Length: 334
Image (tube, rainbow, N blue to C red; front, side, top):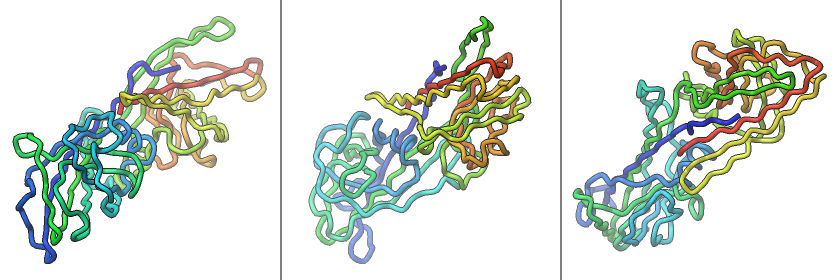
């Protein structure tokens, strides 16, 4: 089963530059004062949304290239050695706005500074990375003036450069139907289904919580709910995680493990909602995975890491005389 409409998680960013002297007084000479648009790279979006998380501290870097950054870039054009000290991690609370269209925008601002006299010279580009030495190139762009023309910042030995970097991420905060299909069992019975993507955050009702539902962790579990959204059945998490790949245009493809059950593994007469994801073993058959049947929405909980549910129009029945297997593919555009 695969989703036919990739889940879109767009992003944008901008930064500002500021210089101060040894006493903290502003120095405006040789420093543009406008806000500068930048690009969030495909690799940076993947790391932030899928791999490492949105909220970690990051590092700023300067460069001297005159080439525009594009989303497929993996570094600044001509990096200057040495990055800023790490910015502090940022929070979801207070930084999320409901767009009232099924999405939320998370606006995360980090301040990254170089020590007094650490950077001396003229620089033409700014970027942000996940580590102090190598790491993933998250975002960057040429320094530009208020008219959008490339310009530079000049830093003297008695000056400190401070970079204020803001990234905006748009993620789903409710459910969305992303695919349909039909399966036929060995007896010739056909079952139509829908695939419903879930909110990005596991505990979507709690703005303090940061953990995503999407392909989180290193194992996976399958949950089955009846037509009431309850009547639980769940399996011990498999040690096999989702297989995740990404291409050069930011399309992330995630393939769940292929779960195969023998006739004697279980007998379930009402399989209406089937979810794949990461759940704590104790939570799989409890409150963490109850479905709101009106919008095919799994309960908001730190323990619910189900990124999608398959919903059958007519419940599937598996007897102790039948085998059963399921595998789900999801696509996300970052």
